[in-house]
Length: 331
Image (tube, rainbow, N blue to C red; front, side, top):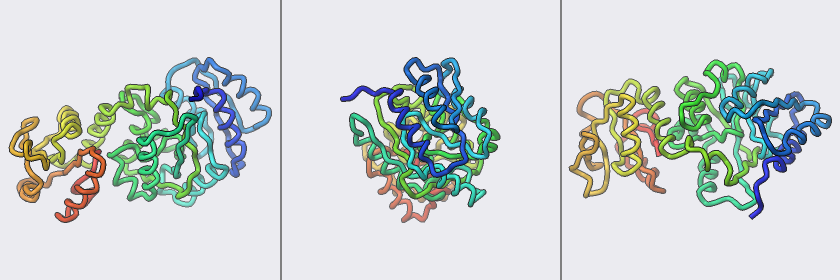
């Protein structure tokens, strides 16, 4: 398997940005204390690419680097990209056009393709397929608590809105997912150009694979935090569908953040009739009764098994529960 080399892939990224059909843009290349050939590559490219403005800083980590880059940008829009991905020539023009034509959209993304010198594993391919199935505002908003629906390097945002929402923040979970959830609970809109405009590089050194902030546990912490500040904010009762590992872990964080869980729903006979975290575990047939008694609850579907989400959605549709209001899928 070839060895991943960040400096060599930077060349491909710069080539792709030089080929952009959008002529009026500036490239702020933030160098977070790199120890490879990146500074020399940027210096060499500065003469070939007038839009390029290298910004060298002592190593400070991703979040400080992102905020430094955003602060250095002067334009109306900020396009996010990593130094080892490849942009389609129309990427910037198409995404800026989307934002310019619809002032109500805050975040413009696109479809993506994953690639890597050592190939791309099946898990990443499943994620790619899911990402590319979310195009409209309704698609993205419906699934935003399942996983991050916007690949960070594919995003173009309005500079003033990013600053107004506090930029990138460190809460111990993924900084990009945190940002999109803050946009969402603030009522901002997302959309995608329905075309593959970014090739997203997969490699073992990506922070997704190496940084504990990107663990499943920390994703669940982020979801609980923003569920209680968004969809569940005015609900007195929370019902969790799923008494397995995911439901158990999510419920822990909901309770720690002040949520009130009144029941779990499960289909496993050996779980029904028991309790978890002080709440009863009931069968799916008992859900209508729960819904009719007391203040209207919110149902959080926390079953991670592949294929389960579609089956549960079908059952909830039969009960005429509305996704995005009565219930949210969170796994």
